[in-house]
Image (cartoon, rainbow, N blue to C red):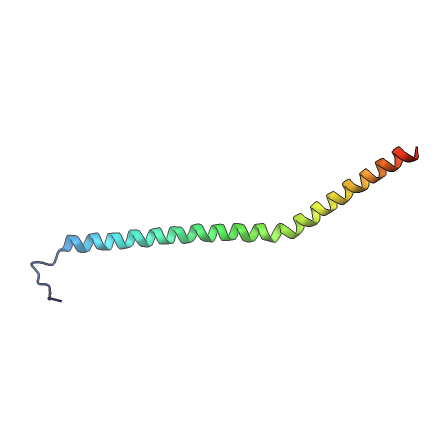
Length: 77
């Protein structure tokens, strides 16, 4: 590769290249922050999952118990 002399060294090209690199870096950082927020949300959602399953199980059990009692009243009365 030929050495660059002061005449053909383009400062504007270097400035544009640096600005483009900064812009790409900012895009990458923004995407990383977005992914980290999404991961945090998923982690929070999965930490509540066992409690949700337990609560839904209790509701289903109560509904079945209520249905059983209603049928017992209906048939035994």
